[in-house]
Amino acid sequence: MKSVPLSRVDILETGPRMTDREESDGSDIGVGVVSKTSPKTKRPSLYKVLLLNDDYTPQEFVVWLLQAVFHKDAEAAVRIMMHVHQKGVGVCGVYTYEVAETKVAQVMEISRRNQHPLQCTMERE
Image 1 (cartoon, rainbow, N blue to C red):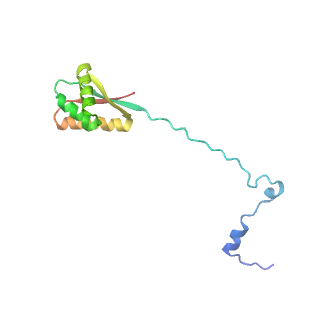
Image 2: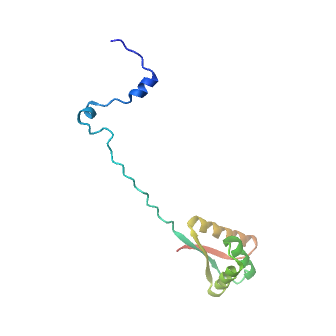
Image 3: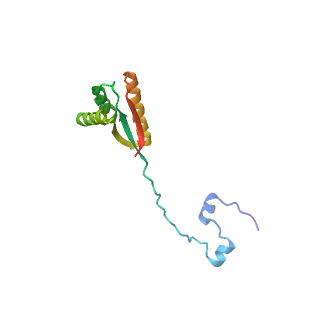
């Protein structure tokens, strides 16, 4: 028998060949079970950003900081500042870990640059 070279089109049109097993019992021909699993997404842990009272940082600076870093309106900023002043600690906001960490770093950096000893921490909610 003479061998004839096949063109690419001939190969694509004929498709893959079935094995003897597939031809004999038909069990492997295009039969399958598709199962769709939806991924279970877990909510990220939340962290409270806490502002600690001190006797040296001016109240006006704390109000300004709450507005600048935490985007609080004037009324909310004054309310949080007064809570921190009276109770010694107050929650500025609740965020995911990375956001809370960034907010704490911003408060600490701005306070140091302005020569204030204001402390800010975060704790898991």
